[in-house]
Image 1 (cartoon, rainbow, N blue to C red):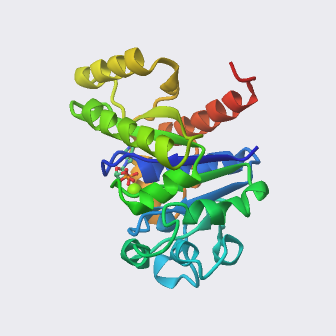
Image 2: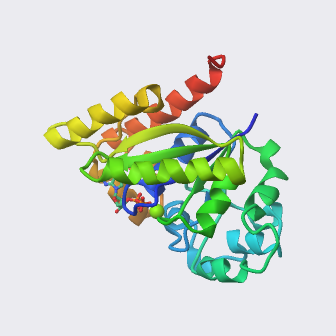
Image 3: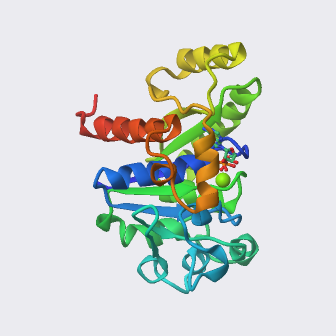
Length: 258
Ligand code: ADP
Ligand code: MG
C-alpha cells in the first residue's frame, strides 16, 4: 500500500524541507517510486529538487484549485529521481481562494488518491503554520513525520501539534497516525539537546526514530546546487543519516504490524 506521509511542524526552520527532499532522494535511490508534494509557497523543496519555481507550467496550486489533475501538474525532478508537485508564491493565494470552495480541506487528498497507486511513497512538505495548506496535507496523509530540534521549547510546540493531529483525526481524517518523531540538527555534545532527546524517548518511546539527523553543513549547502545531499556529497554524515532513515522506514514497513 502507498505510504502517504506529511512532514510537518508548525515551527519554521526545524528541517521539514531538508528532511522531505533528502528522504525522497534516499527512498528513490532504494528503487522506491516517490512523489514529493511541496505545500510551502516559499518553494524551497521545489528549488532543492532542482526545479525552478520561477518557471513552472503547473504547480500544486492548480491541483488545489481543481484546474489540473496531479497527472497533469506533476514534474520529474532529474536531480532527485522522483516526481513532484512543485510550488511557488501562487500558493500563498490559495488559502483565500479556497475559502468558499466546498471540501476545501480535502482537495489535495482527493487529487492525490487518483495517482497514489503509481507510487510507493508520497511525501508532503508542509508550510510552517497550522493553516489550510497544512490541513490539506494532514487530510491527504495517512501518517505524520515530525522533524524537531531538541531545544527547550520543542516539547511545548510538540503538544500543540499533537492536539492539532487529534482534532484532524476526530473531524476530518480518522486514519491519521503519528508515524514518528525525527531528531534533526542534532549535536550530541550539547547537554540540553541530549536531555530533550531523553525526554522525547520517555514520552514517545518507539515513536522516536532510531535514526538521528546530525547538524551537517553538506545538508545546508546542497540546495544551493539544486540537488539533494546524496548527489552533493554521498559520504557526508548528513547524507548517510537520511539514507539510514529511509532504511528505517523500509524496514518498519516490512515488519508485520504489532
Ligand atoms: P523547515 O522546512 O522546517 O523550515 P529547513 O529544512 O528549511 O526547515 O531547514 C532550515 C535551515 O536549516 C535551512 O537553511 C537548512 O539548510 C538548514 N538545515 C536543516 N537541517 C540541517 C542539518 N541537519 N544540518 C545543518 N543544517 C540544516
Ligand atoms: Mg520548509
